[in-house]
Length: 337
Image (cartoon, rainbow, N blue to C red; front, side, top):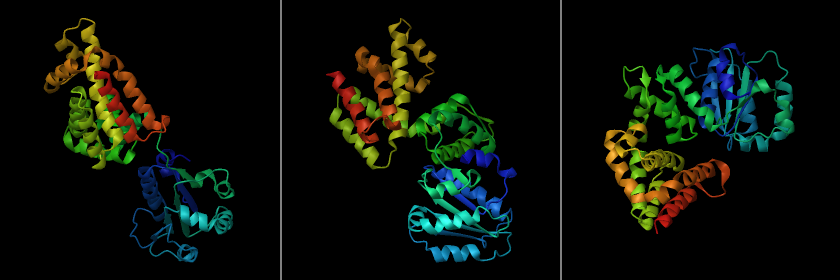
């Protein structure tokens, strides 16, 4: 069962004796674990009936003893093995026997939860676990995340997130649901008593730092300072800047410049072109300067280069995100020669 589906149907779920959480999205795993704790232990969980073990250190005897221990002041006991891949590998044979027994239980006091990164569907162990006891915590496709942000923002923070604001947020942050949630939290506080979060709020609060870094890179590139641009990029990445988030801010500004350039080439006055593209007044002087620096040839190729970098970071290239960004910088600087 997909994690989001499980969460949506939580009120209709009944506790099961076993759950396997697997996938690459820590945020969804965290949400699933929180939901399971509520489902298994009830609203008045005092912490006495729950225990967690790291998969690289958990022993079979300890986990089984805990699972068999009667719960204290709770209807059931919840035993979770975190990052359980090593545990599953070591104890696969025992787990196969245990799972075959537990999935048939109709009455039980202990609930075992295995949190793993990989869970091959063609293994004997995976085939033993029913779909209702398997929760897939995999990051959804990027194109679905804006709608998720809108729904999550309303349900969790009581704010309406505009559709263009949701798209911009995903563009800035990338497919990282935990970070998207954190930014939505900040945005909800930022708009205060306002009922709606607009694209300008996302641009100001979320895109500010990335945009500043992107513009600095853009300035260096447009000036033909390739070595300085690469050095600055590497410093940002070494300091922990996320490559996808940086590309998102970079792409957002690049596209504004490219759109303004195309309208200007069609005879639209530059001030009118910037209004059409919704360039905020404080950024218009910078847009005009960048248009002069780039020239028509590079403007015509910006979209292709940005698309190539974006698709590459989403799995379409064997290059790392760092290498893709470096290549983009080199392409822009070389074109100036």
